[in-house]
Amino acid sequence: MIFKDYYKILELETNKVTMEDIKQAYREQAKKYHPDVNIGNKIAEERFKDINEAYQVLSNGVSKRKYDRMWNNHIGSKRRRQAYEESKRGKDAVFSDFFNMFFGNIKTEENETVKTTKKKPQIKGENIETSIQISVMEAFYGMNKKISLRTIDGKMKIFNIKVPAGIRNNEKIRLIGQGKTGQNGGKNGDLFIRIQIEKDSKFELIGYDLYTSLCLTPWEAALGTRVQLEGIDDTVAIYVPAGIESGEKLRIPGKGYKDGKGGRGDLTATVQIMVPKKLTKEEKELYEKLKEISKFNPRNRE
Image (cartoon, rainbow, N blue to C red; front, side, top):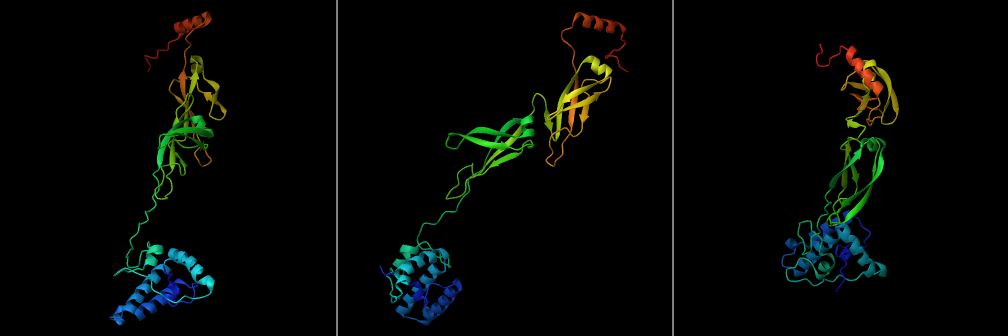
């Protein structure tokens, strides 16, 4: 098969030309050999086809680079120019055998496409979302956690995730590229892990505030007292007023959950008055005496 010198066809002396040089050369040659000004001239007609063919290859950056490598091997490295010769083309064919063999996937400016397999567009894989549950304490301090998930092919895979300190309830952690596989060379999707903060035995998280229980004896509630309350990161001393009842709340500002801005929510303690299930003989006597002398009746309060 004859190698076609597309630069010579466009009357360019070298391949060291710009796209503008190629366009200008194409316009000049196309005007010169256009069938409308060469009516009945079969040679001009074939030359016009070669001019279009050369332009389709050289005006496309990808195909030009491919052609230039061939051109350097056949012509440029030999420091000589071969005479222009036409390649065979089928009857009424737009492009030559040479073009179809090496550049059959180029799309022309007129949207005329040589028979070829169209490159499929890259499609990113779908994202996957799952959720895990952690305690309030784990969320407050942050943690490294291993989770095991079943992949699309049915196999179990272990993921190491870092839960940042102060993460919010229902906030998501993103693992890039761990979702479904992309198609046609597209990127994989991502894996999103939704964090669900559970209420534990000590704390419940609502917004930025933490809620806990404060258990008192009947005499502490009746007389008032000062107690040590265990917070999420330290212990605080709080004053309990006399006569406090179960269900009442004591609020400690700035001892709650992290707000993400360097501050803290509040810690709220809900009072629970606890009654001893077993009494000593002395305790029972004291309760009996209290029963005789007390006029307090919780069922008849005014």
